[in-house]
Length: 483
Ligand SMILES: [Zn+2]
Image (cartoon, rainbow, N blue to C red):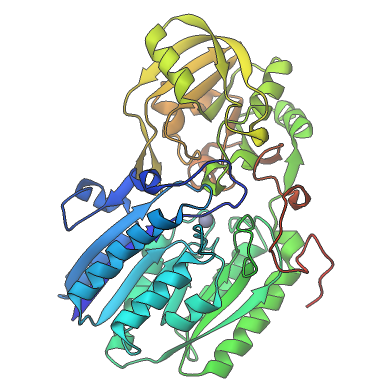
């Protein structure tokens, strides 16, 4: 059997001030045909699993382009088309194939394309014809479109938020498509739209049990897969939103009925499953009142993993004004200040203007007197096991707070954001991290308490402040909705 594997992953935020180009994808771009980026193969979760599973099954695997970029604004049309066409050209050259597996995000927008994944699926389908299985693995923050449903054989999203299960889902999707190619199953898909916006961690009840319940339905009674898809709110187009996608074996009515039943339950639990947000000042009150530490304060509004700049200063400013001691914050994306720290050297004390540079949601820059406590040229963190370079980074001490400044924009996933810069997070009373939920996998085991902080910023859940123009309405919580 011949398996074709490729992927492009970008979560596109219509309101992000950060432009996106082909260069944005260079940090994780793998071009197996030319050998470029092969050293990062294992960092491309999902994509590398498809390859491994295919090779273990004695398939002939064609590895086409894989690339991903940090969430940011819609990319230019020509850049997107060049990346897409590289994959399509590889596929044409590889025909005939027996199976196609794609690692996509599900919320990728480019200029001229609201729905890059649907566009890719449609073009891949046109090349391979109606019978070849096309499996697409998605992030659960996907906006599933009619074009994706019409052209893929199976869409399967990760189930967990934090997304710790991409590898498991890759295995499930591989198996489903392999069985389809052998004629053992006939997947049919149904989607039910769930008109809600929100941030829904799967680490908390009642969503935890709901995810487990739906996972247990798979493999029984003709149900092949169930995906609870949370949607990505900041992609401003009509098909944006949460949904439930069910893949059944040959029975469309069954898939449709189950998607609707689960979709209504998902919708009706929306208030109970949303992150319990606390405003910034009360969050600091609660953190300080906690007898032990560390209290992890998640600045979800400046989560680079959703297209926020990662350089907002609201949380640090509030901590400094309160003269908080024994705290640490990771990370403020500020390559210019990092350069100054490198030039000054470890031990130097200097005046720095940090953060607040990217846009109106970043707040004002902070003028501080800082002591450089550590410098690192190649620090990295781990994104569910995959290494992610932080770029040149510096740790500075500002009054009683250790602040990590870095130069490759990203959210805070793992403890290495602190430890690579000589900061022991376990000894701190307060740890401020810029992340909405992915921090949870690494930080929950050391946290005395976790607070989801609703600070000002680019990814506030106060959706009223964003100039949505094309979102379909009604949409909870902006509008009254009954299902
Ligand atoms: Zn996601």
